[in-house]
Each structure stands twice: as structure tokens, then as C-alpha cells.
Length: 283
Image (cartoon, rainbow, N blue to C red; front, side, top):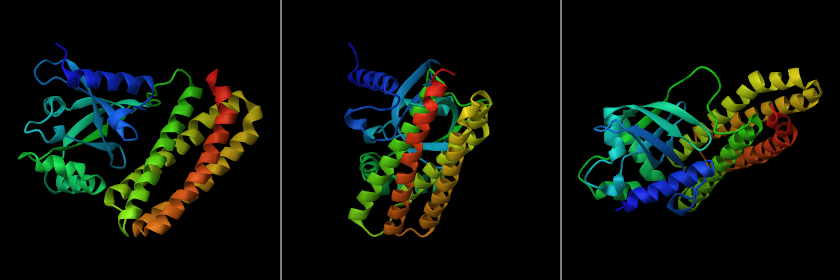
């Protein structure tokens, strides 16, 4: 007889992959990955939808809550036995090393999660076990990232849409904090800084790789590429203003900088898609 949890996970996995990370139901509008681990006893791969927290740099965090169950979830026991895992973000697929946080580092990360969503505290209250927090460190590989797209044009649109979704989440989280108090949560600051770093890395990659490629094969695009590079510089300046606002965060100042960045970035992404996707779709 099919297990209802397995059926539910299978439906989420299929929807996630079909829609490049967008799903409905209880995960709608949240941060979700597909985590593939190697069975601790069987050695076979198992894929599970898991919520995650941005953590800056080359790692994200996942929390082995199992809804407050007295037992760790299977995926956690698997990665303890076999720490190399596969992460699917909906846009990117990559290998990662899983490291369970310990001591103060674990406690601080869990406190950030609770500050952002009290549901984590409710899970901890239901169980005697200390709910593990796991860092997934991306394993750097040579060459371009593995993007789940059929053409460079589709890849650009998927990456852009991922930035749009994350910025929407950040703005929603900011609105929630503004209603509840005068300070911004620690996890929200991490979310903003992680977004800033990801945007910087994306634009650097375009400047160093994609734009020279297009200039060589399509010399007529040089004015467009010059405009896009100038927009990268303006956006970088706005990112630095946001970083500065986050050092001593006043919600109104951070909101102002996020809104400025959102306006500039959306115009930039739309122009880039209009100009470059037709060229890249056939590349």
C-alpha cells in the first residue's frame, strides 16, 4: 500500500522539477530545495523536498525537524552516513558536502531560524532531541554551473526569475518585521546579504564570460552590452548602499534601499531579457 508521505513528496518533487522550483500547497512562496541523499543502509539515492535558509557564501542551511518527531528524519541519518549530497534549487543542480553544525554555531543558526519563523521553536518543544541544523557546502567544480535549461536564453530567464522570487520573499519578510517591531531579524539580514552576493556573482560572470562571447559573435550588440555593463555598475552601487544600511539596520533605511534596488534591478533584467534572450536561445 503506498505511503501517504512518500506520495506527497513524489508529487512535490514532480511539481518542483516541472516548474523550476515553483510549487503550490504548503511550500508555496517558501524557500525549497530537493535534497538527494544516499541511503545509510541501502546505498540507494533518496530525494526529499526540504526547506532551507540562506547563509551567505557557498552554503545553505537545512533543519532536520521532522515536524518535532522524536526521531531524526531519514534524510538526516543518510547524510550523516554519506555526507556528499545533491542539491536541486529549481534552477541549479550541484553537489554539496553536508556538515551538521555543533555547539554555539548550531544554536545561533537555530535561533535565527526561530526569529524568522516561530514554527521551528514549536517543533523543538515537541521533542527531547536537539533538532539538528545542517550546512550544505557547495562543491566547486570547474566550468559553468549546471543550470536546468535547454538553452542559454532559457538559462538567463530562469536565473533572473530566481532573483525576482528571492527579492519578493525578502520584501515580504521585511513587511512582516515592520509590522512586528522596530528592528530587523538576524536571518533577514543574512537573506539580504546572501542575495547581494549572489547578484554580484551573477553580474561578474556576465561581464567576464557571456558579454565577451556575445560581443565576439554579434558585434552589433556592443551598444546593448555597454548599457548593461553600466547598469551593472549602478546596481553594484545600490547593493553597497544596502550592505551599508544592514550594518546598523533601521527598517525604514533598509526598506528604502531594497525598494531602490528592486526598481533598478527589474528594469535591468527586463531589458537584458528583451535584448539577449533572442540571441542566446539559438546559441
